[in-house]
Each structure stands twice: as C-alpha cells, then as structure tokens.
Length: 254
Ligand SMILES: [Zn+2]
Image (cartoon, protein in one colour):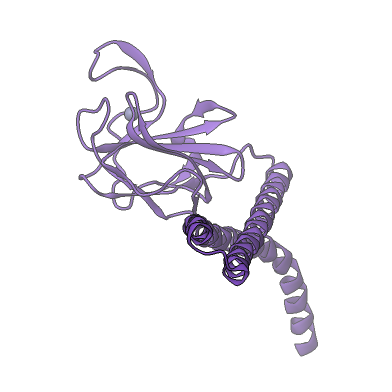
C-alpha cells in the first residue's frame, strides 16, 4: 500500500514538473534579460568614459608633439592611446555579445509562448489588471459619445479612475515600445509582450520607464494622471492584438 502511494506521488510529480519548468525557465530568462540590460548600460557608460579619456589623450599628444621632440615621450603617449583603444574594442565586443544573447533569449521566450498558445488554442495570454485597489470602469470599450468632443467615436480602451500618482502596473512581462507624450493620449506607455499582444497605458502624470526597458508583470511603469484629452485622473488601458484593439476586459484577470 505504502509503495503504491509513493508510485502515485512520483507519477504526479513527473506530470507537474515539465509544466513548472516552462514557467520557471521563462521567469529566469526574463531575469537574465533584465541583467543584460543593466550590463549594457554599465558597458555603454564605460565606453563613453573611455571616449572622453581618448579625446583628452589626443589633445595631450598634440601638446607633446609641440613641446617635446623626445622619442620616449612620444612612445609613452602612443602606448597609452593604444591601450585605451584596445580597452574600448574589448568593451564594444562584450556589448555586442550581450545584445546577441538578449535577442536569442527574447526569441526563445517568444517561441515558448507561441507553443503554449498553440497548444491551448489561445490568441494571447491574459495579463493582470493595471491598477491595485481600483476596479471601477468609468468608460467602457466600444462605441461612445466622446466626453470632450460630444461626438460619437470608438473608445479603443477602458477608463479606470484613480487618484493622481497611483501606480500603473505592467499587465504582463514585456519590452517598452514607447514612452513619451502623444496627441490625445498625453503621457503614454506602450508595452510589447512576448505572446504578441501590446498594452497601452495613457493620460499618465508621469512615465517611470523608457523605450527598450524590460518590464515585469506587476512592475510600476507609470503614474495615473489627466494629461492629453482627459477630464479627470484615470488610466486609459488598451490591449492590441496584431495592431487591432480588443476589449481589455477579456484580456485581463481582475
Ligand atoms: Zn479612454
């Protein structure tokens, strides 16, 4: 009897493990993407510092030429310049390798998501509600009379009112495609996710992320505001699939 229980548990464990591994590996891959992003920033900073040093060396070498005719002085200056150039080359190579690694990781996450979608016959994976504690919708998705123009128009998202500066959360893991100001939207953040969907968060008082940033599900990416065509503090939230808007209510788990 005891043996049977163990066998049963073992079978159960074997069944659960591969499922957990897929998700755990996606998590790890996203962590690695974020790590790479940090490294890229650090290396770019070092390259800029080397550039400044090189410029300084070049101007000093001109001075040496004009005041000294000693071979040794010249050699010393050239040697320093050479080693700076070599350092820069090595850093550039490192940067390139990290960028290639990031692209490969992104491709691998996208492949995993695609396989999951195909297997479960889904067009995308629902994300999370973009605000904590605020769930009321003041304007639904679809045809409506615009609150400012008073004309019939199509509302591309849902409006969720919340006090100014409430944190707006990334609905899913992804890459910031746009962060800035746009007509009508005011301050807006657009995030491209690995399953193919894009989410939009508009009228923000402040955007906390920049284009190209990797964001994690639930990370605060902006703050609620009333910028652009808006009559009060709220987040205008959209979900796009293949460039077309869809009702966000169907795309998030409250
Ligand atoms: Zn809206």
